[in-house]
Image (cartoon, rainbow, N blue to C red):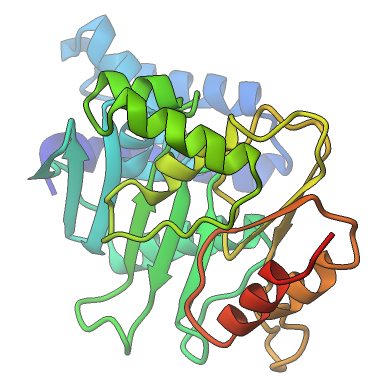
Length: 293
């Protein structure tokens, strides 16, 4: 742990003691408490104003954000955050993977962050159910794998998406496809052809599907089905977004992709968009494609 992380840990403990005494605390009240604790810290006179502000934000993020990950989540240049263990974090910046300069203070702290993330989307991850997909409030996709499956310790991968999804014109401008191919795809979408999108991890499948969705007529009813909601269809008002649900601690209550595909057929869809197909639900999807409307 470097000097700054030691300062953060010490100030955090001071603030935590105050929180235990005061009960419920608003975000603004918490921020002011942290500022006061930073200014009272014994080394504060030697810090510049910008250093103090940076430490205030770091401490605040340990209570209300994602701790050391929060600056990376907010950095728009970063598209992927890969946590291999509490001491090993990598990020993808402008397409280049590099090791982050921060670590979690402990494995327990990383586990706390993971539990807070999955709880926000009503999911559970533990030793008996060590793999889960979730998402952050901003729509970023999260995958978690816990020990004993993950040998180094808790593992988490965060895939971030831009605030504004890329359009087909953007993809053409970047050279991802030609304008002729874009026009052909437009005709297929508007002609209601069935389209499969395949590719390796990180190849841009979701980005491409979002771009294709701009060609869907705005007067149609669209049902999206995903393990973890990440599609950004902005041009269709009549949109229903469905998401799977894991089983509870008793092994009950699971809602699978297959269940959602079957249910969607009773929702008068003009189109069904399935985010990912990996198992028996492929048969239900193929049967849905053969339904004549």
